[in-house]
Image (cartoon, rainbow, N blue to C red; front, side, top):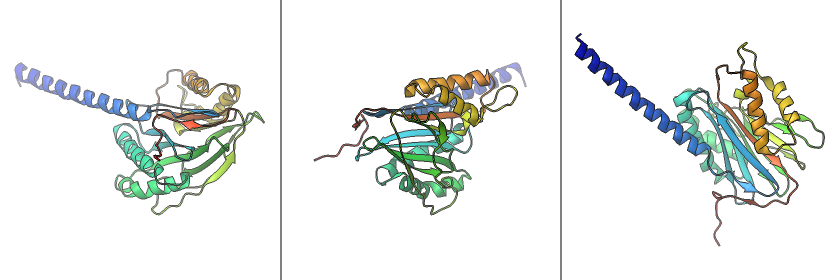
Length: 278
């Protein structure tokens, strides 16, 4: 092969690489836009969410959906796999969640409807999604939730100053089996309580010695920073993870959602909240 042919072939490869990189960046922007939509604001508390993908794009998912009854539906999930395939399934999951949120009464029904909607697709792709879905009622202080094989969120109690897992709600991952019915549990939250939803990329984050961050370290971090507002608490957790990993390569997506209760009267409102006419 002559030099001219080699040069032409290299240019062709470079053009393909540039096109692929543009498409990856576009996919990342689309995912970032969908994950960073309007955050509902309401009296009596606040919610924040953040994600740090292990690659340019990831498969973790969180979302907020204000309901007409004044509640806010929160979901966090982890798609099996990483990178582009996981990101594509994350978009499928988001669509199923939002569609179900409009027509289901509670988080258990929401997960049941999602499993019915995307089970066949996930099975065909030999994948699954773990999800934790919760309805927060700022008027009664009640958190109702259902679980589809996901990490149990942590409850930071202001009264006892302790951090513990929420009472367990059983349920297998979405895409695991057809015709699943997801049971609900409920708890009453007090003033200044915090609920910390997370994916396993946090507790399984590793340092250069392959030691994991682990649940115990997360609980210590939440305990030390429990009095901070939701946004500051999120930063404190992320800083703790970064200090622990100390530049070691990130192997999994890191995602968290924080619900912080305050002592104000509640009246939920949001730019993307559904409007009831009449």
